[in-house]
Length: 146
Image (cartoon, rainbow, N blue to C red):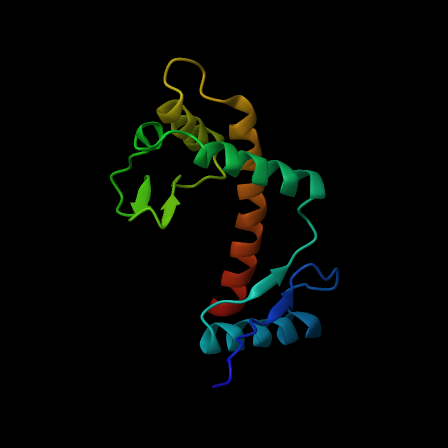
């Protein structure tokens, strides 16, 4: 029996000539739409996230998920699937609504570290990374909906 290997499309969203209305925009937009139709997702190449920020967000995630379960369970939200979720110990998730807004991140860190000022370093790292994710999100939505 042979194995089936699925390769997600890799789409470069960092091209300097990628401006709405340009031929490059039309080309990438077509690639994005096809990837979403065929796979529901794609891998994005986006060089606007510095190596330092990449390393910092990975360290932050390791620190957050190393917290005791009781601490992570303080991450609650009235929206479904946004707070702390544990899927039969197979995977966990923590959620922050609108994580590019520092106030929301500070509320999140206050939930986890209530007897202090949250965690300023973690808050700033999450905000900086979330801002880059929002840039990608806005760009892809423009491509899909226009």
